[in-house]
Image 1 (tube, rainbow, N blue to C red):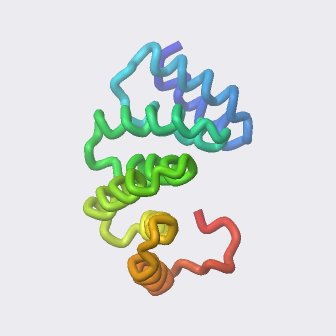
Image 2 (image 1 turned 90 degrees about the vertical axis):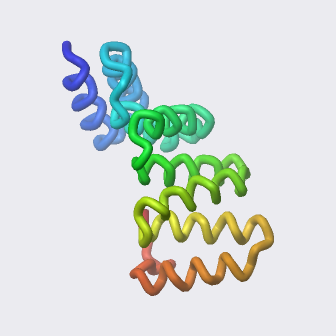
Length: 144
């Protein structure tokens, strides 16, 4: 089977909640073609969903190596770092994502959370206000 077919199978498995099987499909795709940012990003998403944040960070890093403007990879790597309590590292990634896509609400909200954890209350509040002006609703479930 060609790499892209494994990748597409992995995406379908991921969307249907079969995360472990999705990872195996992404593994197979990467084994056949190891230079596609999307393969690593999707496997990283699966690891992230399972709480395997260090593995997710490794895959998001690889995705960024292949596509330096992959702002979603920076955001998810930042979020994984947040969960590992690397708040400053997360802020660096989120800042990079926001350099690429200025008003990406998810990045702004996560950066606000990180700033709060580092004691930067003013910065956290500024980000939170900006995110709400861009449509973020903290009462809505499933914002991201």
